[in-house]
Image (cartoon, rainbow, N blue to C red; front, side, top):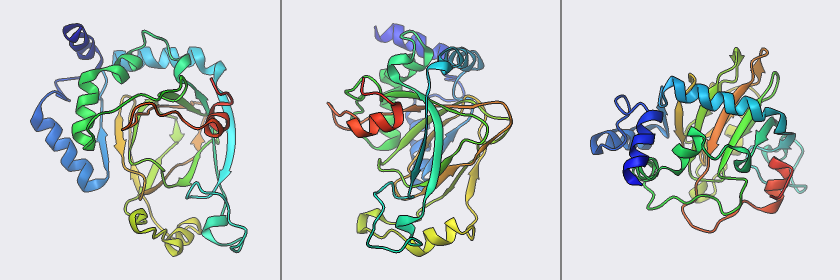
Length: 265
């Protein structure tokens, strides 16, 4: 089984450019993530793998659940005790379509990558995690997001300590990942309200990531505020989110599943 997995992985990942099994490469990746809060691995997958995943995604796109969510940057409930202009009550909009884990083909290269023990071992070393587990529900582990023209991901901080994404198809324009690192300190509950207000008023200049199809990104977004700008043009931005947990037997909450997926199972 391990030999077969290694063969399969070698047909998906460009292991010459990204030797994820080698300690020196893992150490280099970890150092970059620790320093910058983001790790961008260009051409992580072979072009043939990305084309296969893209073809699968397009065939399932008609099943995507589209939603528009209005939220604050903290992804917390709005606070009636604060003014409407307070950052806790400033509304941003996120809109996208999503297909869920149960809709990803069983023999997809994307699923083979997600389940690969070697890949998870690499992630553990880089993210400084002991073990990574899939979600216990059948929807949340692998998601594919579709952002058509005008759709975007609004400014926010993540609730989780890390996010792993794979760009499947870049749009003609727009769809730019923007972020500002260390924009709050959640450890001491410093939400940087003044800074967030300045950002929402257009007075901050964020950093931008340039990504091509097949780029794997590891990102620590709990204290780094970030967004994806609206897609421009008729080519849909398609991105896969590979979601893991550091604990077993964890399911996404029922309310979150209904909000993002439109179903519980």
